[in-house]
Amino acid sequence: MKRLIAALPLLLMITACDQAPPSADPSVLTARTDAWEAALDAKDIDALVMIYTSDARLLPPNGEMTTGRDAIRAIFGGMLDAGISIDLTSIEARVSGDTGYEVGTYVMKDGDTIVDTGKFIETFHRGEDGVWRMTNDIWNSDLPVAAAPPAEDAPMADDAPMAEE
Image (tube, rainbow, N blue to C red; front, side, top):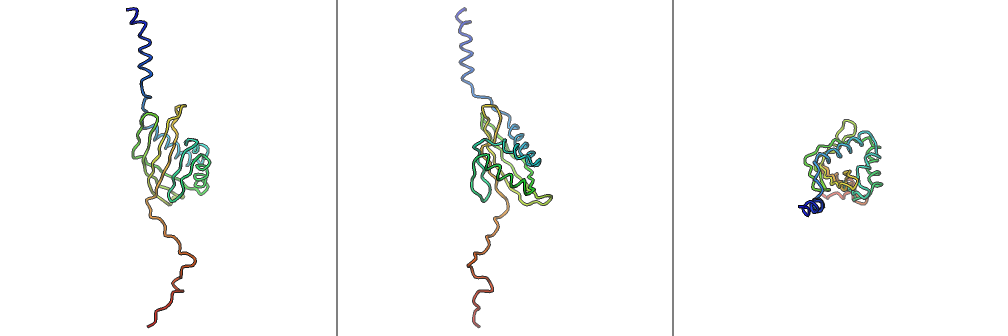
């Protein structure tokens, strides 16, 4: 009996070390996305940037992938300066261990005018401090890509040779 009592703490320690970290409720991710939207609406670029990891990647539509908080500050700071607001709607959020993702839709506005609609996927990681931060942020417009302007050396309609009759 004494051996069993002496071994009990060792058994408890072994089983505790063998367990995976508890999965979080996916609402932690939607709360982070809500905080992102609130920071954008409040024009608080510092709060918005801190929702991302220091090496987070942004994958904007029709643009280069950028990495890091300075790039995040530049892209979203430009939106703030332009007076853009964004309404986000979560469709799905999942968490497994220290990793999670959220899928949703957005409506981008300039004042009351809708200038874009689309969808997004955000991936998150729970840091050693227990805080969930965004690691990847990609969004794509539902609108067609605007037609490119004609090249400068392309003939204009008035410059086209006329057919002989």
